Amino acid sequence: MATAQRPFHLVVFGASGFTGQFVTEEVAREQVDPEGNCRLPWAVAGRSREKLQGVLERAALKLGRPTLSSEVGIIICDISNPASLDEMAKQATLVLNCVGPYRFYGEPVVKACVENGTSCIDVSGEPQFLELMYWKYHEKAAEKGVYIIGSSGFDSIPADLGVLYTRNKMKGTLTAVESYLTLHSGPEGMCFHDGTWKSAVYGFGELSSLKKLRKESNLKRVPIVGPKLKRRWPVSYCRELSSYSIPFMGSDVSVVKRTQRYLYENLEQSPVQYAAYVAVGGITSVIKLMFAGLFFLFFVRFGIGRQLLIKFPWLFSFGYFSKQGPTQKQMDATSFTMTFFGQGYSPDFCPDKNKPNIRICTQVKGPEPGYIATP
Image (cartoon, rainbow, N blue to C red; front, side, top):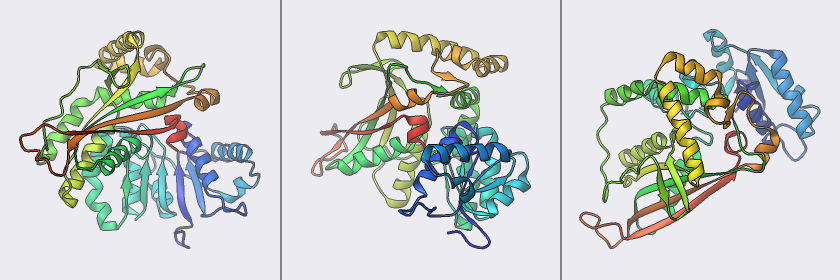
């Protein structure tokens, strides 16, 4: 709660960025009581007062709340100025961090929040950042009594909660889940902002760092219940969805595995194996994605290649990513379905030497994933 020492319940940091403006709008929409007043005091934060004011004015116009700008605080701070981040953190109970790529800009915010007793949420889809922050700040955050919650957007809430939902719905022991993400678009197609593209470029370019981090963590293996879940080919066919699929390269697997480890080690729950895929449609889409993937994997290996990928996202992604991001019409017509296929054992069936004897299918559906579902 807000106090005299912490005047704001929450602060949206990076509110003038592409994702931040949608988060700001959603917070403004939700923070309204029946009388039209703010439920909780909150603020927006960033480098430019003018840009932050502009975001609030656009949100006020869209939501029909002309007094919004005067109801929301503005905090000026810069990711390159640790003192300003400390001042921001000291004024809030919770910081919603929308400044990415998080591998470059995320840790200073986490550090400031932990040191000043402030909880922090981000919408990162970058496994290396998420896992590194856990190892560096988990114990410190626990000592301070605050929460550092990463990957709280489309990456990876639907996947993580979807697996838990599937477990709860299965009448028995769930041992393995495969998820398939299907994106639906309207006549104008779909598009994502290049901020997500940049995170992917840098993530693939530094895969060795993630492998090194995991090796150094020296974690005990989580036991496998039932047969080991086999990894599918880079291109496989899902009969249930009548669609080809490719592995999902976001943070879902990393997040779900860490959740399953926690549930096993702390709550003694049977761990669930997990794999994530994207349903891409017919053979034409497969060929298109194969060419894009080959270009991406070749260029991402070199510094100059990564520069080209970042400079020309629309070209190398075959139009799926752009510096402008999606139009409102594209977002309104886009949605997603995540289908979970689970397998396991009935209560009276021993998993030691037997194959799974029950299966389950669940779904999570939502609006446009990046800028409507995420906020």
